[in-house]
Image 1 (cartoon, rainbow, N blue to C red):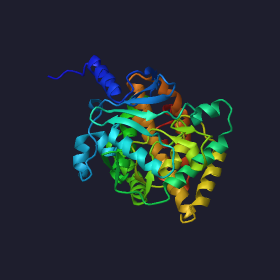
Image 2 (tube, rainbow, N blue to C red; image 1 turned 90 degrees about the vertical axis):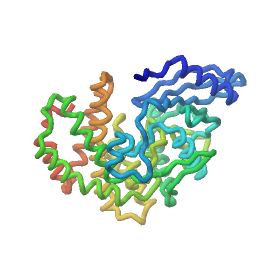
Image 3 (cartoon, rainbow, N blue to C red; image 1 turned 180 degrees about the vertical axis):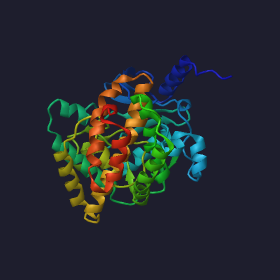
Image 4 (cartoon, helix red, strand yellow; image 1 turned 60 degrees about the horizontal axis):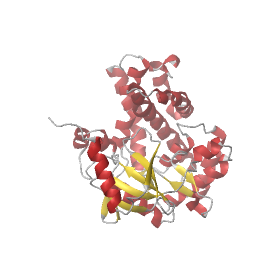
Length: 368
């Protein structure tokens, strides 16, 4: 029977990595984390410069998706493979950062990394998170305009099949129907347990799958652009000293995929962690569509709402309900907002079947 890794062994590994990379004299200060298995520290070098130290213990995540794995193999390997998540891979982070920087965007420079150990030292882009600045009173519209412009820049050319940098290679897979399905289906798994509802019966599950299936098919069919995948106000930094799209610093992009062009927009404009008004959402969607005259605007907006509804169900299940069940009640505070986004999307007449499903199976008192 194997035992859990010794914390002191991990600390020794980290200290040795920092010494070898030339950061052994830096003072280390832990930074706040999120629901992931990663942790971060700020490094203070003797000369006054600061850097970010990323620690992603590989053993804490299930395996990632092999590029040619079948759906059955992906399911057998676990959620990360089925949903095509990078499991915090340092190789994914290094190669994606390079891809973004090569296009003039502000991903942090990688100063040192050890893929096998799950360690990296990054450029410190500061603390000017969009969410923090807006809470302090900075106007939100200019920040969101710049973020939309970043998405246009990221989507300006077809993405490669493989990202390469610094001796690392990482496949840029497609956010396909299976990945969308397994993510959305986590609502069925976790919400009843959280809300005290009975498990959804076979007929309800069969209807759920029939109603969502076209959405997942559209999502895969439209998967044509580089997609950050977690593009929201707590992963974006304001860098006003830079120019153009480079004014937006990018974080937590290691789960990047080829996906539908609506995907990053819906994360930005239906942010589960802060209110984005319908008015601001509409203005930013209009800005994006003006920059993408190649898109059928009406069809795009419908698919945006449908995929946003799918994402809201995923967040309510996989992220918030699951975390609350694991003893992290702080995630309950985000649930009412996410339900409002979901209900707003389901007002689209073409999503009436899904609205009716939720109305029948999740009564208002079971929507936290």
